[in-house]
Image 1 (cartoon, rainbow, N blue to C red):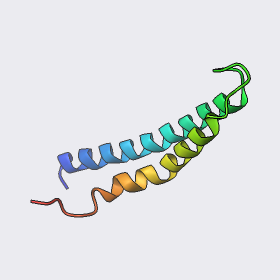
Image 2 (image 1 turned 90 degrees about the vertical axis):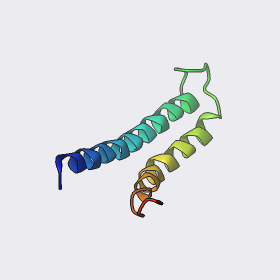
Image 3 (image 1 turned 180 degrees about the horizontal axis):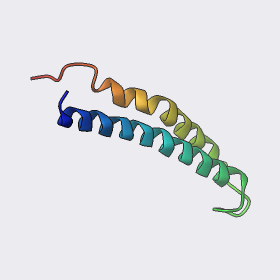
Image 4 (image 1 turned 180 degrees about the vertical axis):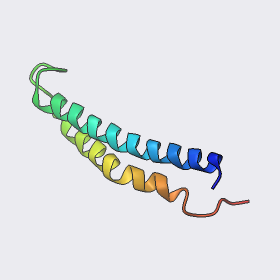
Length: 75
């Protein structure tokens, strides 16, 4: 493999991990929105569905991103 190929795969790996980390941070922020007074006094129920959405993103986002590279590109 050439250096360009290594760089491309490294960058894809970094993006997949950033999707995971971003989803996890989103879940934590939404749980704080739901259960604490940090963002809204008394919390708000909108944090629960948002936390579930971010949880799905953190689990399935990297898999969907990686599936873009399994098939040969259309020419």
